[in-house]
Length: 449
Image (cartoon, rainbow, N blue to C red):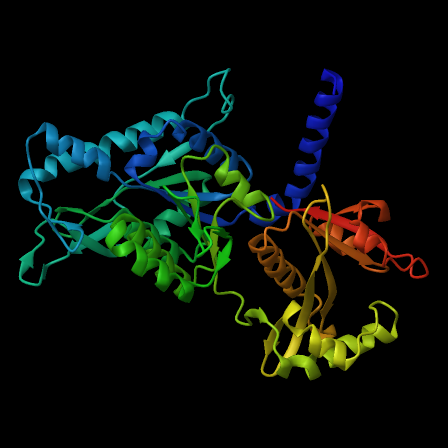
């Protein structure tokens, strides 16, 4: 490929991405996002890129509350001061002697973030940006108290969040910056968990998203594959795993679960080390990490033999219209494990099937998605996308590299889901041999990363 072809290919990829990101840009405008990152993220080389991406989100009309931690910087300050603070149940006991080191760490991070967001150099992505960052006594705290006979002294917990003041700042197009400290009504300063500050803020603000920038890309399943979407109840097994291995990650997950169960419909776990992870998570279909949501109260699951009657009721009208190929009861029973369904109160609302395609030689491992159907009363919901996403994850678990669909009426919908139109010749040989030229179905393909 010559340089001009390379440039053209890169340009087309950018145009394709920009077009597909437009719906997300529109959806996110005027929404409230709480973004939490710890002190290690601030120290990382990629943090300057995160700041640039935050500035971009602000320019797109997203209301942002940033919550920073300071654990790494606090530990460093305490070491310099030759002070030690004990821990109990993975929580720091904040002594009065250590408070100065803690406040210095928190204050220096706040100044660093404010300076980065004020940067408007001509050679930076923030050239010409005007961003006002506000912070202050927006978090009221109370003592954490005595637990198991241990006095946590100046370690506190969130008492209230000044929601009215935060809303005023957001309405004035300011970014709100909060840290891991809070103030009591008697004027004392308390050391707080940044995760708790972020979670309580997101819950009380009824934020649209709570985003944790942590060490990991997200959560992995038992096969070591990224789980792109899970429910808050599925977090329990991950919390148990990390409680002894890495208490910091366990804390992220506990607060993420609390937020999801208390009205924050989208909680995201992404990596602070990956350049562009924040943008990829928010403006692409698959994202870059794990999204926790309880919005889907009808869970996608693998079909079983008891679902055959419901599948027939859902599929028959579409088969009679010629949209789907007829499948007998016997065939459905024999292939039932290939189907996924969404059920509600005993009714199958949506279904789809994944059929691995035999391949030979240098052919990529492939599969066909077929029988995608949604109950007529629910076609304006996202259940079709939900069940398609479920089968894509199943295909990845089977190490399938590309998916195909054959359709006569709904190609546009599959194109919206990231498929591209291709030709019969692109099908693996075994599937080409079974292609029905009388139906003249369009062929669409989707590569799987």
